[in-house]
Amino acid sequence: MGRTVISIFTIIVLMTCTGLAYANSTGFTISGKITFSKTGTIYLLILDRDHFKDYEVLGKKGGETEKSTDGNTGIIIEVGDKEKEAGEIPFELKNIPTGTYAIRAFIDTNGNGKLDKGKFGPKEPWGNFKSIRPLMRSATFDEMKFDVENDINTIKFELK
Image 1 (spheres, rainbow, N blue to C red):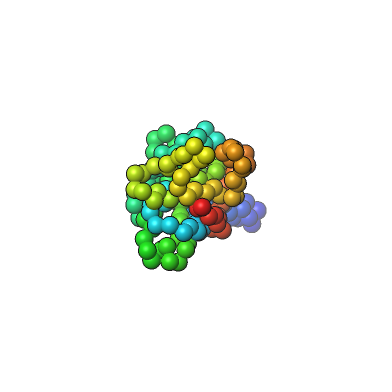
Image 2: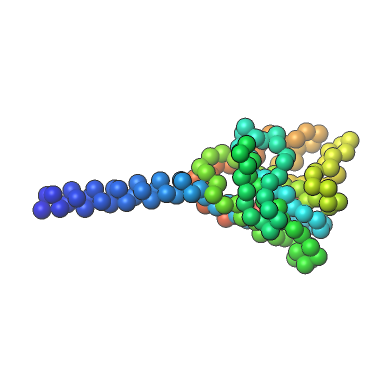
């Protein structure tokens, strides 16, 4: 009887630990909605502290998450007239490891594949998760950061 209880307990512990290791090895899904008022291509990046200054967006059109060898993870979403009329579009980032991140996005209205900047800041609609838009400076990583320890499906932000 005593060995049976210990064996069952051991199996439960192993199954729990294996499940946690599997969740961490495959990563988590981060999803939500982006609101906007223009057509173009949305470039969305999830960045850790080491890559926070990066703006190069990877991904495949259609919203498929892609990760580069240098740690950038992003998606590219086409916004047409139908999506503009709705004023919002869902996004999903898959296989994001446990960690602390910030999300940046912009809508490329002129089709050149980058965020155009002028004398007083970006010329194209942009936004950050947590809606941080300081006056006369960029938001810092610490102002935008959030922890990923499980799936998150409640993220909302606006490109303006």
